[in-house]
Image 1: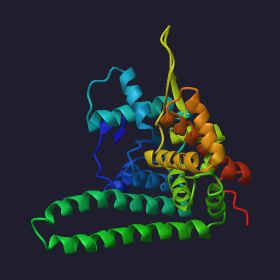
Image 2: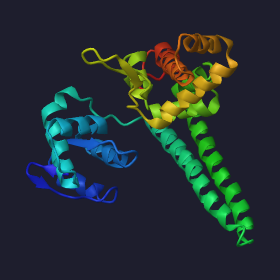
Image 3: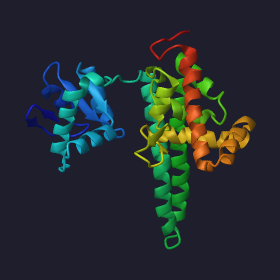
Image 4: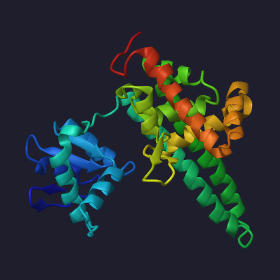
Length: 299
């Protein structure tokens, strides 16, 4: 953390209280988004009354490149973030934590997804040993059942929180009205989107997912469009799987994808385009119908 010319190091999350105590009243704080690790610090600093900006790592990387920076250390990164915020804070959106129900939903779903991804690696390592150590098989079976149960328990708790909140419950049902989106994908869309009401339009929300194309064109070189990949990978994956299911089982969406393929688009590109459309539709059926974010709680 940089303050003027002073740079201090605080462990995360254990050092967050010391960081809060060290900062002067009215300080403006910039944090680089780093998976889940920035979240406790951002939340604590916001609760303490500081103005907090959570910065996109890609924006910081581009800023560092524009300055021809060569050093890549924690100290240099702290100074870079401080300079970036000092120059551009008037253009940046202030950090606002999600409402508690959505915060807990996101946490539980992320833990469930972590259990699922780590489970594969753990079980694969044990599978490799069961042929030389027969007793491993029993441990393997118990562990496989136990990890699966943990995952389902976390997801069940997340669903219960969503269904108990009037706005989240409406959004949860509305998302499932879209082709390819069932309960599991709808839960992940809510968990990784945060408050969808903070986006002013379906286009802005689709840009957040990272499913919108970026176009590169220079001189006589042809335009090449690829998705930006700016948003949470798990959110992007949720919409992509929804699009894949819709392209298989929904006649209208299947015809739409086939039409793109007939025009020369690769199948994967066509499905990604459908995922972009589903992301826009998700915002429309939730915020577009509800008329606002989670701060507008009707009965």
